[in-house]
Image 1 (cartoon, rainbow, N blue to C red):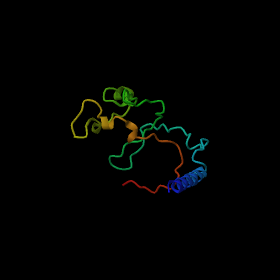
Image 2: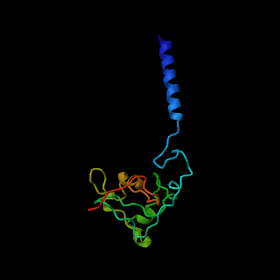
Image 3: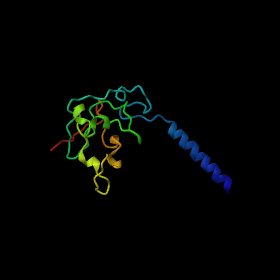
Image 4: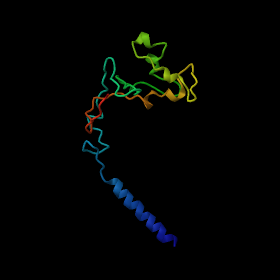
Amino acid sequence: MQRPIASLLAGVALLAANVCAEEVSSLRGHAVTDDSDTALNKQTLALPGGFAVAWEEQPPMIPHPIDKYSVDLRQNGCLKCHSPATYEANKAPVIADSHFFDRDGNRTQKVAARRYFCTQCHAPQAGAMPLVENVFQTR
């Protein structure tokens, strides 16, 4: 009885491997793993003044490259320019007050742990063409 089950499982695994081996294409029409896609390699747009937000309380887009920034448990490269102590000297927007409240609503002295990793909400704006039509309109 165990031999037919093992054969069946081996057959399913072989079938799954064949299905996975087929080329998967992206919305741009080429293999997902194709690194030559120019849209993937576009520079981040540096936009003075930043990007307009589309809805209330939307996390602002990052209008400059961040690929050389380090954000980990020991340091946050974003705070070098955007902290309350440094933003004026760097002519950068200060991080919002909401970043200083913990999950229980208590004000903290430092950036709250749930808001420390900037890129979980804020994303750099790339110069890539949209994959699908965007019909979103602001108020």
